[in-house]
Image (cartoon, rainbow, N blue to C red; front, side, top):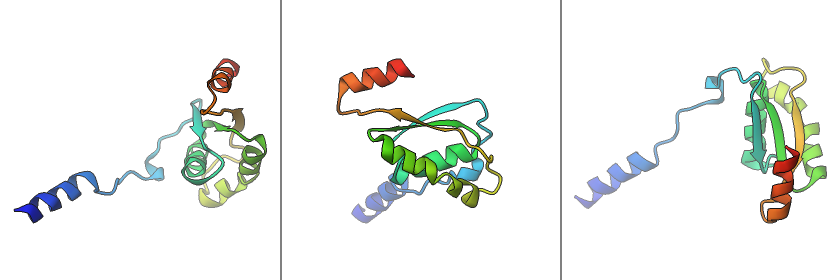
Length: 109
């Protein structure tokens, strides 16, 4: 009985999501703010959104790291052949550990 319950729980809560980047519709005219957009999942999200023509703000603490991520933007074209040539990627200074900087980012946006 315990094994059945465990199996059911695992299937319910740990089934892989079957949503893929190619199922994202056209995002022309949409704006996205991605935190931690210079590395890891944030960068992967940025790439996927930009590939579908969203205007993406890379919300990062470091302008240099955000600029480095923007320079890697040609990677978008390599991963997604149908991506626009000039994906709109912009830096937004945001430090969620500092409420004053968070408010400044919101005001500047």
